[in-house]
Length: 223
Length: 100
Image 1 (cartoon, helix red, strand yellow):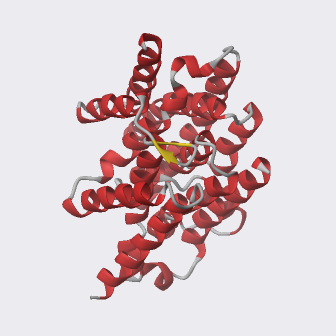
Image 2: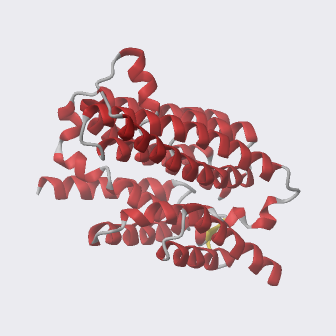
Image 3: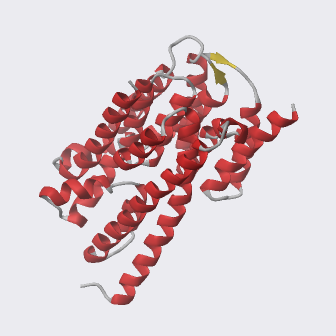
């Protein structure tokens, strides 16, 4: 059982996060349509992929005239962290069968953060679903609004949204740079990608950077 | 082809979420995996920022997008909300293109 005031607090937080991510989804819709994806493709990304950084990466690579498969690879690599979130959530959620299939789609940064912030399992579960449903609804609504509004413009590039993906990536990256190691890794990754860029096909620098960071992580972890 | 890549990527992203809820714990609890996976978004986002700001058609270039990124950086340092960071970057590019 959850006390009703605890429940109210959780719902209030969930709706707050939902509104904030809904606004963020409007910018995704705008960036994705400016990149050249259709309204249907933009909405399919939010419904089916439903993990912000991966969606921005997919649209960003297409905006930079990269292959859709390079975009897909970047999106998948960015999605790996959700597996670790799921790992932290299994003991809290205790889901199986169809419920697990549905709960899985809601495993993202925000729902994980809200669930593990609670100290009672019942509250964690409630926070996970409340946040998940609020974000899923407003994320898809915001995406549709941003996509339709941008599609109605004669030339969305006039608003500069073609230059916006790096700003979006920076906003996603900044909270992960609170220590020296990730900061050094970010700078090294940027440098390696720029050095490779003129000599390899589009999208390959991202894969090389991903490979190098995996090698680095595995070596450090074993030593 | 865009649809095919989109659907494959979405399926892979879903599979990763489901794997976290389904795989035996020891597979993902390996300390090397725990250390490495959080580093992936850091490296990939940084590489995406660099390549999309300073390149055009496979060549290195310096244009209004660098200024847009710098303004977005200031917004991030000032702890502006996500939408403000994105709009600040876009508006910078739009205004500079109007001006030059």
